[in-house]
Image (cartoon, rainbow, N blue to C red; front, side, top):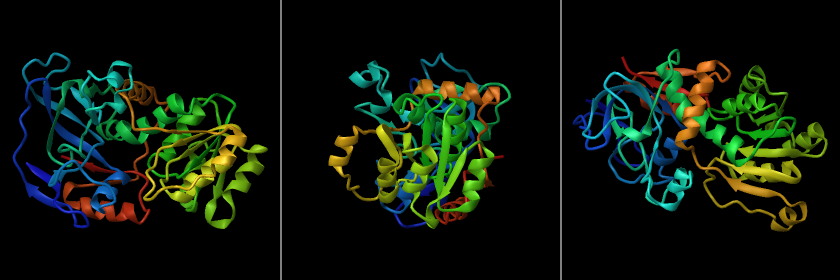
Length: 337
């Protein structure tokens, strides 16, 4: 099969012919139909973060059709349209047993620790696939596995965002544009912050009540002016030192800060200020199986609309990542067939 392989950091992905995987006990083989280009992949390609092995097939935001099932699989059958939940977990540790499988002590990340879906076929544990509802496209299902489900988990289950509250979103990219939709679904008031006007226009298109261009002034002061003293919840999706600092400063006393993006270096936080204002800072890691099920149901109902700005063939994947690096993509997807 054809696959895009990361052999060394700071080198382009290599399009190669590799052996098609076979499903083992409890696993399924999926013919990949779509796989999203995620900014976190750039961290691995640039050597900022490490994959579990090299060489590796990247790609963790995937959907396709089951073409083979291994022994012991009863959850799905050949021909099922599925999305792949990208955290492969043990199901036995204390976090898995308490519904926090995204903190699994034995976690393997699809497309990061084990081969992923920038390939014609990918294998996964059967318990990690979710049937795609009728009417949901493969592209929308793929984007839902991360770009939609990650902010959904962060806002609903970590940030505990409630109707009528003020939310400020730092970073309107592939996750941010969906965070806007999710927040409006919950009945929140949304301030979207970015440095690119075209991304702010997109945020307004999908429901943001206010937008702030951080390249034109102090975003913290603007957020405080808009919200009457600060947001109830701030979410950082940009993963930059300054955006985490902005998020902490943008909330009112008793505010909640949710960190999703990975900054490239440690972030200095004024702990005295956090104590005085009783600010809560939480990290949010990916998603859980139930989050993906809920998100696909909402997409099927049309209340969340996955946003895809560009489509690429597998052979064009390096071009896609260069455009993502330059900030030209909201969400790019490799489409097969």
